[in-house]
Image (cartoon, rainbow over all chains, first blue to last red):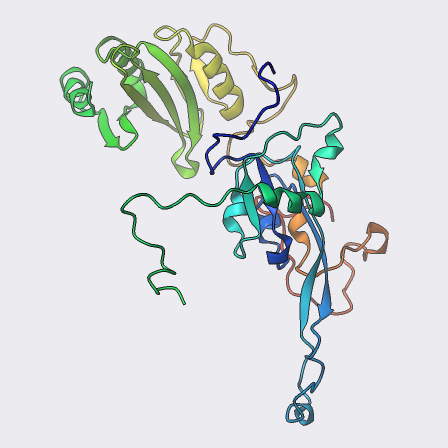
Length: 152
Length: 195
C-alpha cells in the first residue's frame, strides 16, 4: 500500500465491503444462515414469553375457555459472520425479510489471526454506522410502491 | 463490428448448423462439436477476435455440458461467445490450443473441474487440484465432502437453544416429543453429515 490509509471515499453505495447487522430488526428467522452457501453465519437464540400474554392476561373472557396460550418471541443470543469463509455473494442481505442485514463499503478489517475474522454481534452492529443511505432512484424511475400507496 | 455485422458474417462463413443468438450481452454462436475448431478459427480470422479471454464449461445437468469460449477483438472492441454442447457420457472435444495458445491452461482447468477431455492437448495435467484428488468438483453431482465434516449452522430452529454434543440423544433415539421434520443442509444427500 503506497497511498496511505485506504479510504472508502468515492466507492459506490453498492460496494460489498463488509456485512452489517441491525440486530434490532433480526427476528431469528434463520433464513440467512440457511441460505448461506458457505455456512458462515452462526445464530443462537432462545425463546422468551411475551409479557402480557399470559393465560387469560388482561382478558377475563379468554381465561375460562382454557385454550389461551402463552405467546413467545425469539431472542437473539449470538449472531456472527465468519468473514474468512464468506464469499461476499450477498445472498443473506437479499434474503433477509426484515431488513436486518446491509452492505457497508468498509473493507479495512484484515487480521493476522484467522479467528478474528469472525465478527460477533457487537462488531456487526457497529458496522451499521458505516452503511450509506441507499442511492436515489434513477431519473425518471417510477416511485417505489410505498410512495404510490400500492403496498399496505 | 456490431452484433448485426457479426451475424451477417457468420451467415456467409459457417455452416447452417451454427446458430446465432443475441441478447444484451452480445452474440453467442452455438455450434455442434464437429464444427468447434472451425468456429473458433472463424472467430479469430474473420471476426478479428484475436484476444482469447477464457474457456470454461457449464454443467447443464440432463442436457450434458456446454463448453464456452469468450474471445475479443482488441481493434474492433467487439466480443463473441462460442458454445458447443457435449454429452454427459464421455465428453470430449478437440483442443483449441492450435487456434488460441492461451486456451491450454483453461482446458487443463476445465478437464479437472468437469472431466471433459481435450484431444490433442499438449499436457492435460491437473492445474489447481492437489495430487490424487478424485472427482470433478464443478460437476453438479459432486458432493462437497467438507459439508459432512462441519455442522450446518442452519439446522437450528428459530428460538432453539443449542444442545451441547454430550447432551444430544444418540442417533436414532426417539425424541420425547415428536417434532416437525428437521431440515437438512441443502445439496447434501441423505446419510452425509454429522448424525
